[in-house]
Length: 138
Ligand code: NI
Image (cartoon, rainbow, N blue to C red; front, side):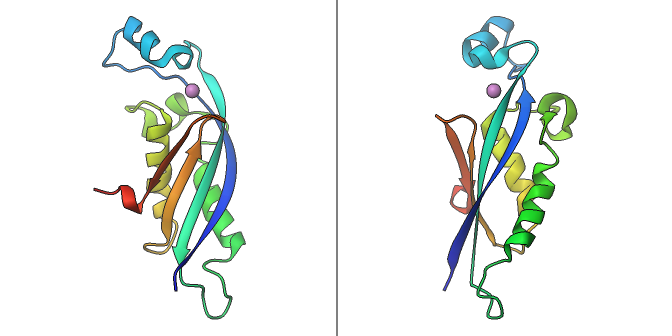
């Protein structure tokens, strides 16, 4: 029987939300404080859920040190960075949490055995979170 395992990771990153497809006034109206010229930061909280059959030898879906190693290798690509300036993925994308969670899903999916990554949830502030997972695929 499949069961799920969820674990929480914290990272920090800076960004500036500004769309090249909008003019300055529109950018301020839409992104408000997140349009601040010199950027700003967030402490993000990422919840990663794996799903699968517990392995007969261990009784676990995946040993936690292995899960941590894989997730942390992805987080290291954005932790304490300015997303728009330092991370190639965001060079031509707007670093909203909606797009950051797509980045995380793509990178995490490469790190786990097929179909093991099930769901991720990204908290940008205490008030808003974003989700992506298998059920979101078209
Ligand atoms: Ni922001």
